[in-house]
Length: 292
Image (cartoon, rainbow, N blue to C red; front, side, top):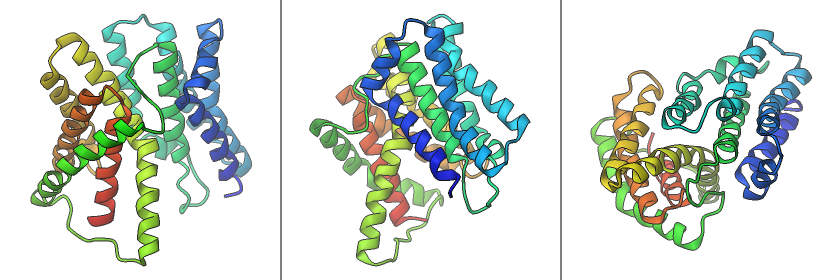
């Protein structure tokens, strides 16, 4: 933990820097796009180097692969022009290490009880966000950590409409079983709040940005069909969950696709990434509290 905390603190700074508009604006003001990409690449490596140096667990092949993957993500929009094919390639690159669970094999902890691969996930997310929003100058709509009042309202509304159907499908597919958390009331409340904001600011933030803010946004702009944009982005969202727990996990893919439809409708209504973030986080946090 003495090694993990400084690494996590450094990563938290870089992560928040990618999410906050003001920090991204400062990065965008640098005159050279190669300099911007280099700083992104460096920010992806520093947390790993801090932890591995303090624990003396530096693995040269693992570090080399981390450096190559991070460089590809950071420099993608410096090396390639702004075209649909290259945007699609960036999304595939961004999704591949997560779907293939690469970070578990690269971020090695000397303590089996300490999951240090979270550093890899967070570094990958913050590098992808900054590359997309700064170097690509993509406009996903309103984006950030804290939703506005209207975004909270829309997110809660779609959660209320969808939670029972999603739970019913999950139970019917035998993907989960109803088993509420049994603990003191204050522990349950604390767990619920922690789970919600953890999902809101990491999982929902990154997935909704890429699936709704990028894929659905591009489809809305190109096809002018809200139904097509919502359905296609939801199907893609479901497909990346085929490897959840095991492969192929069709139950998880179906449930994720349903959630993708609901989040897609929230995005189409609000034009903001933050509204589907609320829906997404509420659904997943409710699942963690009430189902196993």
